[in-house]
Image (tube, rainbow, N blue to C red):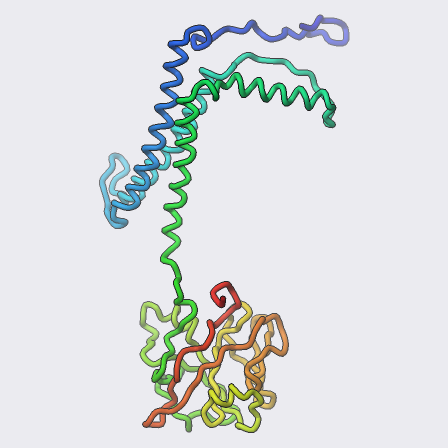
Length: 331
């Protein structure tokens, strides 16, 4: 306690006398508090189990009436209620533990330099050990075990929420709607393409037969199956496999840029180069669509094509590799 003087006219009153709680002097009261904290942790575990059970059992489209809110989604209400209860009970149990069983004696400590001296480090370790001892974590095994159980079980709620990210992609990113026998349909006329419809030096965009713009999955499927068709003089094709997979100089490549997936739409007839308008990645369609400029990481996938008995261009299979950017699905 300080003394008032001219420089410090207000004396430091010091800390008030320490008053013992009932739990400090009555072991039965301490055990009641211990059981209360343990009960909160157990209820938290039950709430987490309720969260998981609600997620599995309640239909996502079921509605219930809750006064005074009105009609709400039953699943959202159950998930919010159980998740909130699990979190609240863990926090309430920890607070009740600290207020009734941990040491509440106030200790004054002098300010010290930022750089810790060896003596300070030793004091910190001593204080830590003292705090661990005063928390009674080792002696109050019921609290310790139920707290660990609540904390270990609660993260399962977050794991369950991962299910709402959608179904696992499986191998669908590696495949498109193209398959053997699928006709190449002109994107502008919506009519199947004949070899005679593709002139030398022209650029045509195509989609798989059967894919219509009013289909629910149109945007998803066309993002993988969009095709660009160019007719090049066979003598100008440098890549052997490209020539084998073409028909009379008609080559079909994915329209999706292998950089970030932009649609390629610019074609230069004399050089047979196509340019992505987003980041200027440039591909040589006369040489396996290899990258000759820009940030794209690999060549455009080629679709092997031929003609059927009626003279229509058709696919002879799917792309031999995933289309689009070189993400993990290309592995």
